Image 1 (cartoon, helix red, strand yellow):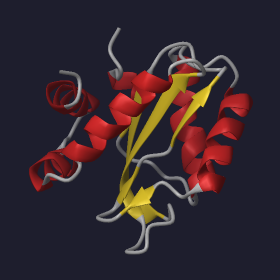
Image 2 (tube, one colour):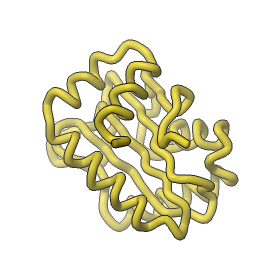
Image 3 (cartoon, one colour):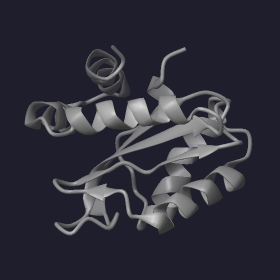
Length: 148
């Protein structure tokens, strides 16, 4: 099964802070049957964020965790016009990728994270995500660039 589906894309993420945004992104995983307990999953994400913020330079955030509440490795994409503070020194994130891995899926989690981080260093990848008009476009970009 694919890491990301069109239902795991939120093009107009409206959360006012990272907790609210994370809840909105997490709800897509519950709706797809990839997370069995939203509150338990969000607690795992929150604990990971407490260790170190996952905001990156250039308006990027990659919240991630391993959780017993995740049924399969998954990726959710969110885009915010206003930006959401995710702890990066250069300001709020406008592009968010949430990585959810099953508790025993550490290796998959790290592979996804490393590949995604490398792709996000490329300006054309980020720009294509900023310009995407539909969830289908985002899924196609991610599948082409990340799911090799």
